[in-house]
Image (cartoon, rainbow, N blue to C red; front, side):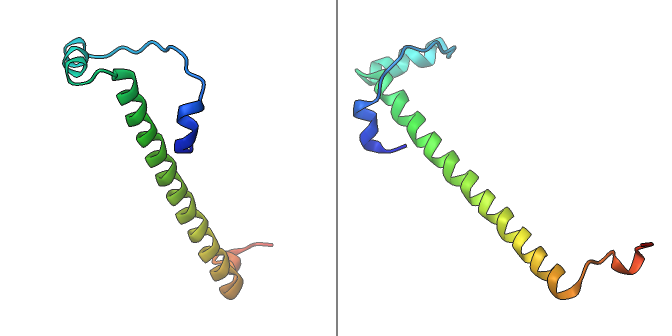
Length: 83
């Protein structure tokens, strides 16, 4: 998600169920509640993508380390194999 896409992105109405008092208070603090929510949602999506990528990279690193160990040392189950 790129920041410059936000200005040209197609908009659509969505239904959300939110705390009424919180929405009313937020409306008193901003003239563009949709813009604020979209900005916060963008930050959330970018942060989640980054965290998921980091987790994926950590898993790939662990798999690579295990595979390297397996190549060097052989499978730990080889000594118990009945084949």
